[in-house]
Length: 259
Image (cartoon, rainbow, N blue to C red):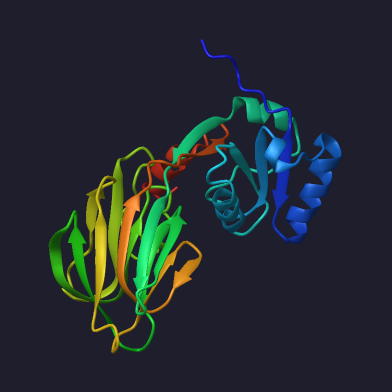
């Protein structure tokens, strides 16, 4: 039987909101605030935006991250409470997240590498609809998509922009990615595809001079792209902690039933 994990040294990070800063002051007074490099766990105080920032910052550290909701959207966060934090951390369950790796080549031939925890999305930059060609594992699957854009979403990100764009909700442990068009004009009835998370997705921009396109990996944007490659980066596994009964897997399941 594995010995329980100890989270004696806690590093707190907080968003700039009044609620988050007040929580930071209160929890730091009670538990101290260790430097992240020497901490056993990182506790993020804010909303989903702060959680994404924290995950990006700690992407290669393997430190577990436990969020408490002190922001606007808190899908990735636990409920906020100052009561018995260390006991909650000891009882928390771990979810592992693999990010997407985006390799975007722009109009000048420059290559930009960025990771995304939620999704990689392509958007038209002007009033002109984007014209895109889609290849999966180096085979053409859609020769021409006319749309406002397209996105590739992870299970963790499937309830974010992907859901708003009409994409499917994916269970966190599903070995899948969602490929979802944004306001597709042609083929008008194409609603996207479910892909294995081993898929190598390539999106080529057609008539890029006339119809410029930007690519965004979470918050990192590349303008005037010509080719975007996306794959799940299995070399990185981020550790998120959730209270029992409130894991990300369970939240995604409840979301599918409208809870």
